[in-house]
Length: 63
Image (cartoon, rainbow, N blue to C red):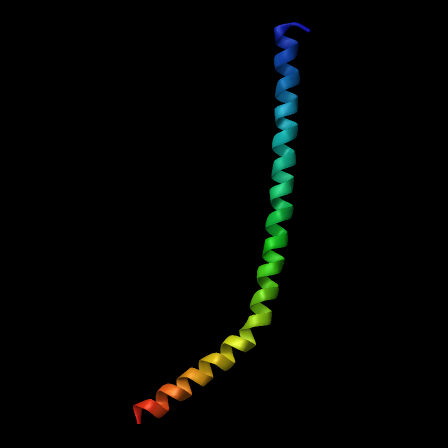
């Protein structure tokens, strides 16, 4: 292989790796997003209960 062919092959490999890493990051981001959405849905009721609990406490201290 001469230098020109070698450069061409290397550029193809680089492109392939770039596409692959892009694909992987999309998959990972999607998984993280799904986990975050699940956590929000799971913890939202808990947070609401805790907020009510604390606001009631503050009211009783204030009076």
